[in-house]
Image (tube, rainbow, N blue to C red; front, side, top):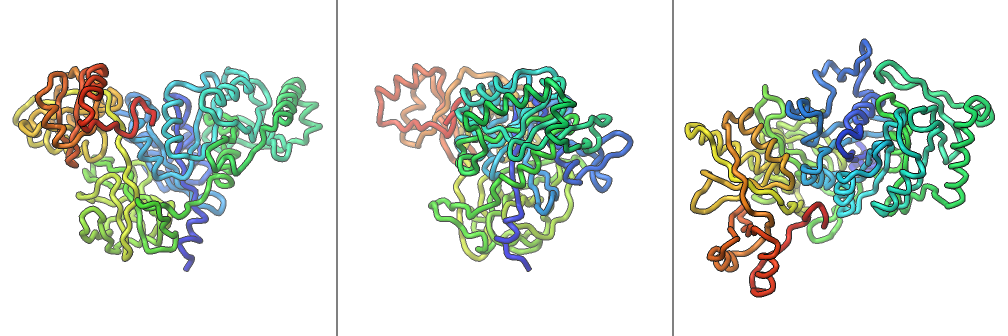
Length: 528
């Protein structure tokens, strides 16, 4: 039997991040196509083994709005590797969920729109990557449509996110007239042929440079001039700088037509680091061959209405996971049975028998397990907590029908555990009118939708005047409760949060009462 370290060497676990509409979901599904996880039938992409849906956007609200709201996990084989693809929300309001997913990934692919380049959300998501020192690949998508000059896009990436861009492939043909790509590593030219609806792998033809120069004419000459300039400035792939999150290898293509997708997927296998020994909370690395351990980075309920259950997503960090093994839930010290372990493919799931470092295990109905919890076998370990983002929007939630209060209370508790919103409670009011705290207002839309559609508890939200949150302690809370413009509430984990109406009032308090504990959370406005 291979060792966990040997199996880990075959794993590539990465996330995809992008601005909404940059083509992230399309690229995700084309990766699955090239990995054999999807098949082509009658001009449409279908899920493997008769699965009902191939899309990574499984929530009804996502499909209605055409954006990614929650993250999903997808595993497929490619070449001799096992690829674990973690899809993330595309909207900035859900960057906290993206942060949690990135805690389980070893690298990320950033997808950019060839016409739009760096957008505000791209910057916020990159800040999340920077906080985790995450190696980053860049894919310039939609090159089959009109867009900007490639050198202009590279300059923008370097200026706005501060990474050295090292193009690995270079487009032949301007955006909107895409002929193929030159691989700068060996000078080979790959010409693509469009297929109907992008439902099958795009035919690829390796063309001799002399023949390409003759057949592609001015497009080839322009691409060759650009590459000469890149060679002169030394914009070449540097694996050490990539792994150190100082440079980003760039690829050009079109996910819709499958142009350049294989090149990018090959790069994931060739460049993304395999899982390594992960540091515990004290900074000591846990060896890959040590007994099983992992941490939960996501909790999700009701992924499939027919199941109505709750799944905790666990990233395996060490050892071999076997279904049925009894492990220890770190925070409680209680034994945890793993009979109901699943591999999750979007909203679909199937029984999983074993897993290795880098893999993701879905633990069904793990009712006591929370985001950030460590689970282990034989040798105790605790992995670093996954911090919460500082909320910037606050609303009071009340159930519309008091006869639905039980459902409301259950739903609020579930959304809190999943991290859909942060739920803050007043000790005197309990769950009758909790304050929902969010990084972005669209989180409120998801909370309202799910409370009504999954828990049968229609709610109304009332905006508050609070704008800033700080973590505090009980002695400080007693002093703060008597002040105007501030309210102290409590999270389910016992953390006390002081909410302020204005930055001015907060700064005045910090200046006049330095003895008060008013701590910043991990991120405000998406920055550290």
